[in-house]
Each structure stands twice: as structure tokens, then as C-alpha cells.
Amino acid sequence: MTVLVAVTDTSEGSHALLAGKKEAAMLDTDLLVVNLSLTEPEEVHTLADDGVTVLDRIGRGDRDPATAVLDLIDDRPDIERLVIGVKRRSAVGKALLGSVSQRLILQSPIPVLAVKSPQ
Image (cartoon, rainbow, N blue to C red; front, side, top):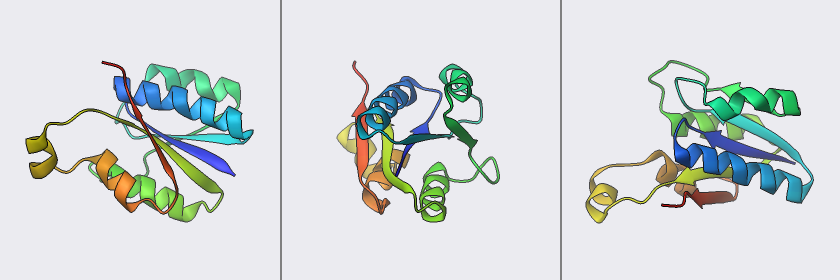
């Protein structure tokens, strides 16, 4: 079993990473981190030293991050949990604009732990 954390270079990404570490420790399993940013978040640098596998988003720079995560889940049957960071959106934002988090929650074939960052 592996816990996958989708990390961005935002506070939501940092909180997802923290929650993913706790989840993997609680389940006594491996942690896999996929960097969805075009830059590398500071926290990701230290993970390789801790024995965590870190992957960059595969494909073109303009590839949809949700598709990249869903493809990774399809390619790796050992991934059994996904951890993502979410942020509050207005009703208009929910109606008019899609979100990576929303797509992952609705389309993921595995359980998703959605972590809201404190305000």
C-alpha cells in the first residue's frame, strides 16, 4: 500500500504534505509525493533525504494536473490513498470554474483525504 500526496507550492500543498506524512505513518506504509507545481516547493527538497519518493508532474507543462494525478493512480496499483489540499471557494467559483481538487475528489478511483488549510 502507498499513500500519494499531490503537492502544490501553496499553503494547501504544505498542509496536504503534512497530512500525507501523518497518514502514511498511521498506516505504516510508503509515502509517494507528486509535485504538481512548475516549481519545486521548499518542503519537497527535504523529503528525498527522508526516504520519500518524489515525482514531478509528467508530460507537457500545460498538462492538466488532475489528469496527471489520475494517470499516476492508474499506473500504480499500489497507491491506495490520495491526499490533497483544498481551499474554500465561493458558490460562484464552484459553479463557474472547475478545480483540480474537485475533479480529484469526484473522479479518483481510490479514497481521497481532502485537507483544508487553516485560515
